[in-house]
Image (spheres, rainbow, N blue to C red):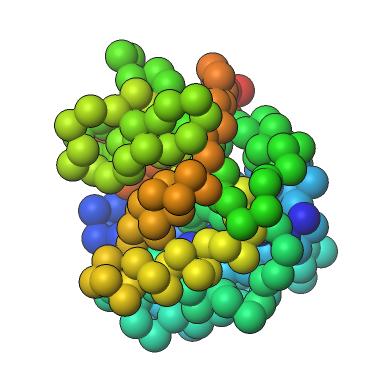
Length: 238
């Protein structure tokens, strides 16, 4: 299984001793290295990482990781990293065919989420998003997380600002090439985000929701979330 990791943004809200967000240490290990380790535990054997802001520095660090751990990491460069995250994903078109995992460089998740999602064969021309139905007492900041409205296993709406929702976007997807076509359609209408592409798919009933159950995940986006991530690691929940 191949995995695409979006790691192009500036990440200005999380600068704790290190300028580049994917390299911020969490429990002494760079954030993106945690992401790669967990995906490998689930069975991923090839990674594609989209870099942008201070990309040379990140690529050098990943090349060192690849040599040290014997992991296959391929680089994709996004020179438009100031734009929304869907631009980074679309840069991967031509590098990935068939189904692949998509995740973010700053989302730490229980490897079981990857493993369970990989075991679900996505219907043709559909994309599956791992969602968290715990919206009452979430680990993540409910004012910052992307919200999702679902019904009968299908996504009805997605976005940070939607008022009616029943779950949260974990940032982990099982994609087919349909994602790239949806990104192109969304961008043509002025929305560069991954959520915009999922909205396109949702309108056609091709955006599916996968319940992660009680598995833990956290978006390490600021110092508060960093502290939570380190506590989860210490407790063995991630």
